[in-house]
View 1: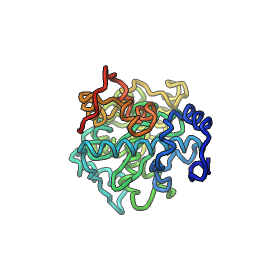
View 2: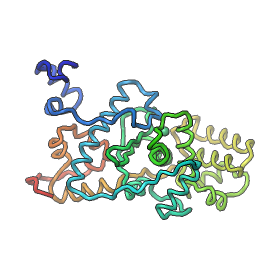
View 3: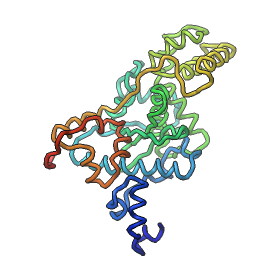
View 4: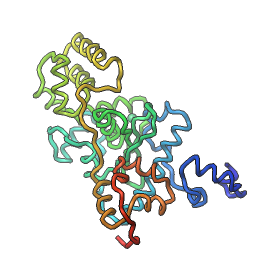
Amino acid sequence: MQRFESGASEFPQGCLDKLCDFSGFAPDYFTKPSPEFPNPKGVSFRSLRSLTAVKREEAMAAGAIAFEFDDWTSVKYDRPQHDLIHPEGVSPAEAAAQLRAKWGIGLRPIGNVINLLEAHGIRVFSLVEGTRHLDAYSLWRNGTPYIFLNTTKTAERSRHDACHELGHLVMHRHIGSTHPKAEDEANAFASAFLMPPDDLLAETTWGMMLDQLITKKKRWGVSVSSLNYALYKIGRMSEWTYRGNYIALSKLVQGEDSKEPEPMPHETSQIWAKIFTDLWSRGISISRIARELHVPEKQLNDLLFGIAGKQNIPKERTLTAI
Ligand SMILES: [Zn+2]
């Protein structure tokens, strides 16, 4: 493989066929100039660190396909420029409050996190790499922020993950996200961004029990477990009640962290949906784009929340300038 990559020797056709069968990539993919992969040093590595090398490479390969597609769409569609801020020397909760103020959302609950991020210029792609250990990752590329989200989690978990990555993009752009406190900071940012402390205090009462949390969590679109923890941290709940709720929740979901009582529907991308609606109206399908970019159609569709494969175009027309 090394020699093939360096171009020092021809790759036997039989092997190339097998490689294509195995990977789903077209032969052109292996002969075109190397695609741009995310630089692992610039990636928020929360859970990537615990992945096997193969899974980590899959996640990075997904990033490379996303870059190709993103560049392709950038030529054809205008999208918002990011307006993220980089407050320094403030707590994660203060950073979250400053970003909310900058974005004009005050203390209001966030109806759809993905749409909010997209409206502020963050490119959001979905990952379905089939590993429980990969939640999300984020990075800066040429001044554009990217977030990759595992969409097989509950919607509440995905929203938290998206805001956790937002915290890395805001707080750790210049210092990196590998320092020991980065994960705690990103989690604290996510919690305060989704549940502004002042709103949390205004909307809750002392010592809320599990059934009340299940009702109340819907206001902020967070998991019961996040709300329980946030209320404990903010002093709205004794440790005794916090632990009691935790145990009651574990019983309710039978010890499966992946389950959420009364879950909310999954979020999806509005930008990719709009772009594909336009592309379909022009007779351009994802198959065609995948062929043009020499990337596997399934992997591309997986990155786009499955939106792109939802509509079958009866007959492809000739590609016209967009
Ligand atoms: Zn992280």
